[in-house]
Every structure is written in C-alpha cells, then in structure tokens.
Image 1 (tube, rainbow, N blue to C red):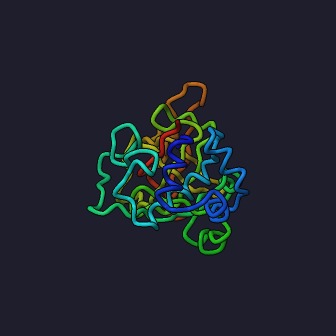
Image 2 (image 1 turned 180 degrees about the vertical axis):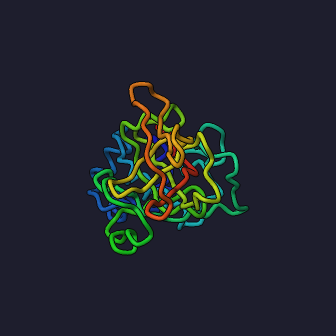
Image 3 (image 1 turned 90 degrees about the horizontal axis):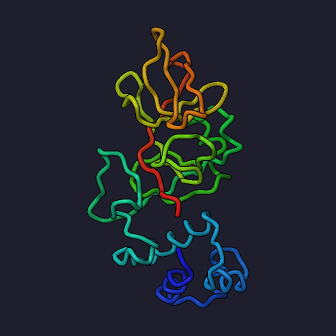
Amino acid sequence: MSDLELKKVRKALKLTQTELGEKLGVHYKTIQNWEKGGTIPHAKKMLIRELVVQSGKTADYSLLGANPKASGTMAYEREVRYEASWLPDQVPLLPLSARTLEISPAHFREFGAPYERVMSPIKGADFATILSSDGLGPEFPDGAIVFFKRIDPDLFIEWGKVHAVSTRNGLIIKRLNTGTKEGSLLCSGADPLFGAFEISRDSSTMYFYKAIACTSVK
C-alpha cells in the first residue's frame, strides 16, 4: 500500500489524518509519515483494509492496494473459490512465539481472544500465521501471512502441499508427503538448506491444517 493509496483510502473514507490515526491507534504524524512513503506495518495495513470493508467500498478493489482476485496478488490453492460478494472473515493471527504450542480448537477458545485478528481473503480459515525462515518456496515467501483450515487427515491430505501439523512439540509448517516408514509423514520445504525430516503420524493426538491462501509480500 503506497503513500498515494493510503491517501486515497483516507479520502474515500472521508477521514482526516487525525481521525484515521485514532482508528488505527497511532498519532496523526504517523499517518503523515505513511502518506509520504513511510513503511506501514503489516498489521496496520490489515486494519486499513478492514476499514475499507466495513465502509462498504469493497467494489473499488484499488482501495485495498490490489485486486484480491488478480493473478499474482494472492497465492491461492486450486480449489479455492470466491463468493459473489467479497466479505472476508477475521481469523486469529498466531504469533511466531506461539508456534511452540499445540494448536487445537481448544487452544483458540482459551488463548485466541488476546491474539491480533486479521482479515482472511477467503471464508472458512481457522487461523493465520506469518512465515519466517520456513523455506517453503517462492509462492510461500518469508514474511507472508498464510491462512490455514483444519482438515481430517484420515479423509484428506493433499500430498505435496503445505500443511500445518500441530504436535505436542509445537506447530510444524511444511509440505507433507508419505514417509519411508509405515505411518510416517515426510515434512519438507523447497529450499535444500532446510532438511527434510519424518514424523510419526498419530491422528488421535495431532491436528492437521491445510494452507488455503497466502498473502504475497511486496
């Protein structure tokens, strides 16, 4: 979101720099800096986009910084389909510090409220997290936000695709394939510097989530 786009958003929302700053929890001088080309934190960009959605101006996708349906703007899985009206859901943004925890529905019931919430570009996501040194390839770059949806691994795992596996030792985000041993999973990335490894698959103690969307990094 450039300085021109931020100013365009603010004027479309009919807000002064002070009013926009109050809604984003920053000083109006910070808004001035952003409109002059300063770097806008990703969390604040998501809040700005949320303001656009709440205003009912989503028909003008340029206000969101890009057309969410445009090729190259978002990295979507093949089966993802948009609704006729683009109304994103808000999902918890799992901080990197929390990825050492076991991530389950109970986890979000107990700890989810304090988490920052971000808009999901598609409906049905359970949570999102920011990638950092995961080595998943160019379509999942470091710094991108990935949105995950819980799946039943006994019914569906799309081999070769990025999944999050919640284990007792924390959350693993890798591409999944069948392992060399019966009942094992091969966890790997696209970068050879990140070595592949195998884990024992136990559907009774693990939670599985499939990556269903990934925001691009500009």
